[in-house]
Image 1 (cartoon, rainbow, N blue to C red):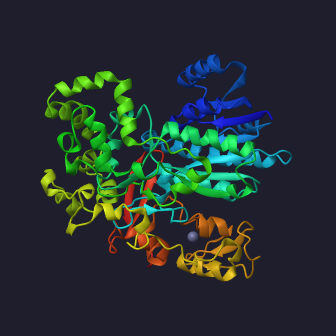
Image 2 (cartoon, rainbow, N blue to C red; image 1 turned 180 degrees about the horizontal axis):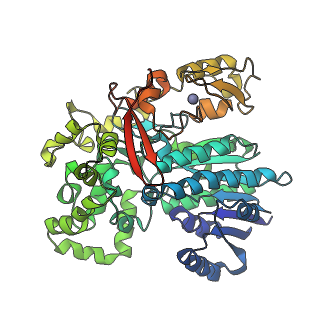
Length: 527
Ligand SMILES: [Zn+2]
């Protein structure tokens, strides 16, 4: 069987590995890849074209152009949709982010959906960022958990909308893969350019995966499905991509491993008050083994990755010769003045962002400059005591330790037993109602009508609501970021929102995409 693959995002971190590894499949006779018509993309396209010759068809254009999307997916067996504008670029270019991540995905979905005969299977890459912020209170998560975009994070907001378009579509075979933080070869250099590195909370739970393992996942998906080994039950579902147990760390250990290769450490190179206290994303996936059981891709871990970086960039070793204070000053401290750095927002009195990332000016005053005064979760330290960190990381104790979030219906029931009563329970937990009076028991894909607490009515499948964490497309998809108010009505959100927000907070966060001005208003609506 000859396989044709349509690929978006081929020049991205996951895309490059995906292209390289799907080309290793002999039966893949053609890959149609969409490249932006820009010098950097053209250079990359020429390079891979020399490598793969006639097997690679380069199409130049923008994913926001529907005609280009039609041209791309035509005659494809699989559409691997990886294109996305990601941070840090997403933080600086919100309009382009929305255009690619939301509009582009809607275009891909529509272009696939238009093909009625021999419709390609769509693999959509989503992101862990749609789950929003986590800390030690709920470090573990899984598919079905609430989707809460971090305030001012246009990336996650646009990705929630893009993913929703896939779930709402009539495409026969789709799958949504929510990608976690990727360890890729350009990570160190990219992060040493932007204040984004200070958005990472030191105590945030993070489960990494390497770019190479992510490419392997895509290769195995195509190979196994084409060989009929995947089974139809794999499709029409959402999965989390994570690297597994060895890749579950925190922000603090991530910096630490990275700095070690240049002879430093988090504590030598950074100060606790540089990084935000909340409003980040990432978590440990309780269910990353589900996708690995299907696709067998978890090979590498964080330590392998940094060792490889050191092999590739041996000049990093020279850094060991310099005193830590000098490296901190030259390489890192200068980034504190970057537009995307929290210390810069504090200095320039950007109240809205300070509120979103720190809570209040008072919290800022408490941020210590000395590590001995800062509780490090990876050492089992909390602000008011200690926690058994190994016990917290034990995947077998997630439920026992109270880390598993409720999805608002009886999850002990098999899917084929789910009925309208379960829909009503789930709707109530989300502060609304299921308006449809009946459903076919176990049918998770025929859309039902729902109403949120604000009275917005919408159609969504039981799968999208109960299994994938989506809800009202009007009030639950920013902007504005209105979760302080939403959580007052929605126990589904409240169970995690108040882990890092005070119940007295009443902010609605707005974002002027044209001027990148961010502002917060105290909610004036009745609650
Ligand atoms: Zn609503």
